[in-house]
Length: 578
Image (tube, rainbow, N blue to C red; front, side, top):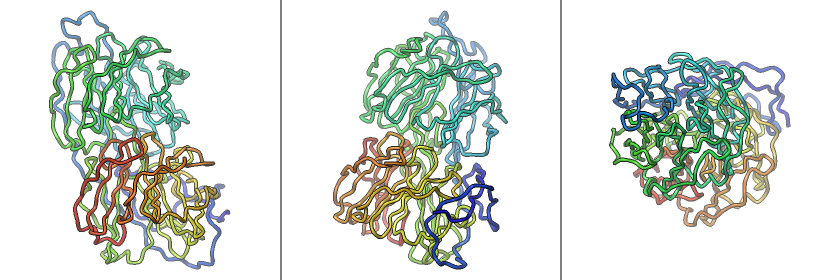
């Protein structure tokens, strides 16, 4: 039912993930109607004011990148005649690869060895979900590709300050991983691989055309959903053709040697070894040691970083530890994991009415808590904490007051009335497949509805009935992908303490698959969804026991959880955690 209000325009990202409280209403975009539940007789609601959320404050470590003065970019003597695969991330043009990464706030940084740069991508200010680079498409250095949560892939000319956008294409949200492994068909131009949620792998050949950097896609394989980490290596066997490593959830790492053929870009997989699930992400940097082969980098769950130099045959020399503290990197360009987006935070409302904020550190821990607003300011507030409903990647703090739903992350913007009929609201992420965050709402009869977000966190499309019988659950939670396919999922706990997983489908008509039992004995816990805590790209769960101890349950990538890890006691100081 139409509320009669019009939504605000898109809110620009601050690149620090800070929502600034607004004293005035947001600008109204003409001609766009917003749907909400039927309005009730609520006059002059007075919710809490908008918030200013603390920003992550974590220092990024640096690598001592080798920059030899001689033989720059050359192969070693024994491989002198091998073709050279151009480095994908030579942003400063010195012939050597640079490190491109995103910090905890999502900002992109380029480490050239002697300085760290923060390029500003000239788009609408939306937060970048993923970034990668490809060589050979244009003169002047590699092309920078960015991917938005709504599936817009953009290409930028190379620059350390202001890369210029020269192409953009929509619809890429149908894939859970998009990256450039290097040149796959032997034409010297970097190509793009894209994997669907169902595990189909497509090749988009790179093009030097100014009109479009990619050609028509070609299906090159199925069954790639078995891997939770895929990393393109540019070249590791001195043939100038891109290669690939892929890891499954059991920790087995496989090598795929490039063939140079567009329709069959890889030879059969070869097992490299097991035990690789000690790492939460893998990424590559092209030839830092002058042997002609790209190096594989691997980060542990605690934040230690290791490098693996290639033997030239798809195997590795013994690893070398490069340092610690790398958990402060959110994502690496040319990284292997499915990028998470939308929520990396937990809020706690204590019994005195004070609200505290924690952000995830990518190592299974939370940052020290920070208070939002004054002590006791939130007494009695009915707060909701959703995955991002707009393009800035930060979670949304909402409040239900006198039946109205207010977005406190947008200056207490009034979504509309009639929300008091619902006893549960959950924002797990995109459920409809358009890349925009959605919410589900359950009423007193146990009927569950889907509200599709408008992408601006200012309104929703008309509600769609998901089904009845949801009153059997006393907790519904979710924030991201639990099953490993890149789609947002939902957890539901029954009154008998059994916990079920509803995997997302990406279809608004039927947003969830049939429920799967995770286990029993969950009735003594208060559950919350903080997003990806351990940096592997999958959503995790925290559970507070009645004793006050908080436990972390990491997703195993198969729709269940690894053994719990204690995060400490004293959490019963909070009346609610979300």
